[in-house]
Image (cartoon, rainbow, N blue to C red; front, side, top):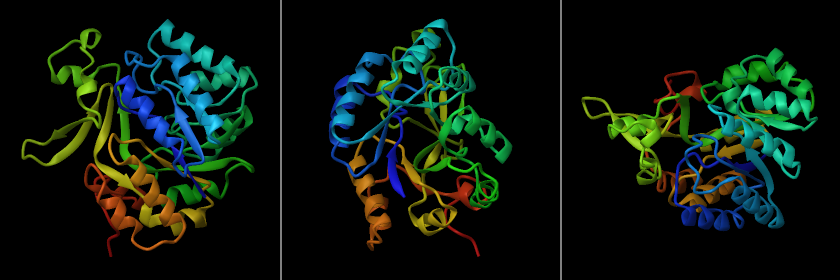
Length: 295
């Protein structure tokens, strides 16, 4: 079982993004996902910049995957998607079914992203037939459901599980960060740059509720499966996805690497650098905001 660095879900300055991936080249991750998968208005890095980063990381020995946009809204978005498919140098993660179609028609193998919403072995079999070599279950899938699905999974397809980060729960044509500032989406003033780990949303009673990230809604808590490695191994999971955060990401990777090596204290080391409370309820078939096993 190895570690995979998921696509950057937030909007950071160009300098911060370049510095982040310069560090990532030295982290013990087998795979790095690159590209803008959330909002096409985030264009401090464009596709040529992501491709240049991909070349640098590949030269450093990382497997590179280009993650496609989850919500295609314009001809410009579609052109970018077609350019990714046609590039041919790097693997591609399809995050919506239009990307699956283009990749399949081009004869390009791909990763089936979590937003394809695969809930049964029949759908997974269809994706494998279209060229998927690896897939991610939806983030709300429980261990029990995943185990049942994998019993009937097509041979040869690898499973990667979202194992760390704020959970991407939903996408909308509306931008909720812009709405928070009473701004229209088309004149959002790029306020996401002010929230490098998303904008926390609380209930009227002040309890953490959700995190706003432009058109994406995330969990308030930070999903962590660092304590579930034996179960993940038993299921035959090939890779754990760690979602980037703005600070201490190197220490997050180090904690998971230590846990995979069986070192004591890895979970405690991770807890010290998490930007929010730990949650893992979905994995146990409960409310997503819960944490820890119940008796």
